[in-house]
Image (cartoon, rainbow, N blue to C red; front, side, top):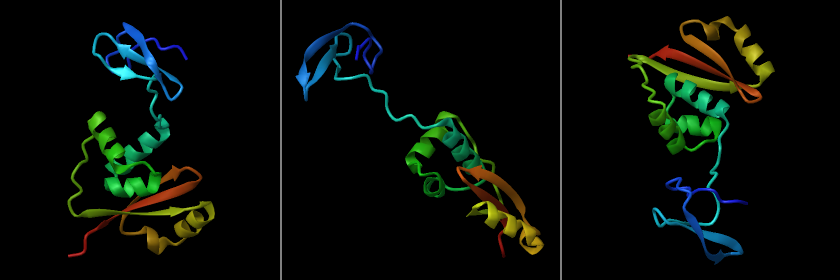
Length: 139
């Protein structure tokens, strides 16, 4: 693997600086940062970022999004900050959600009494579907 630049400052003035765990170690001459390989990090598919932002805007908490998508609530919080997302106030509405497979969703939607009295959105979530309802808080 060819190291072309420092992962911290992106400067290309680097020199070899020993071997650790059978990996070449490098030193950036500009910022004095030691590193062994290019930091690629974990890349999360944009699909999950978009879904997390949609769920956040629908009123779900970071931890609820974490449980649904499987991405850390801290990561979701960082995405909200990074993309400067502002959630509008929901006032006296509260979102609830259910996750269905295709057949369960069809059966749920057939029952008209479950659909009335609330706003609703259905979104794809991998191989399942998520139904989000907004119901007024009961006084």
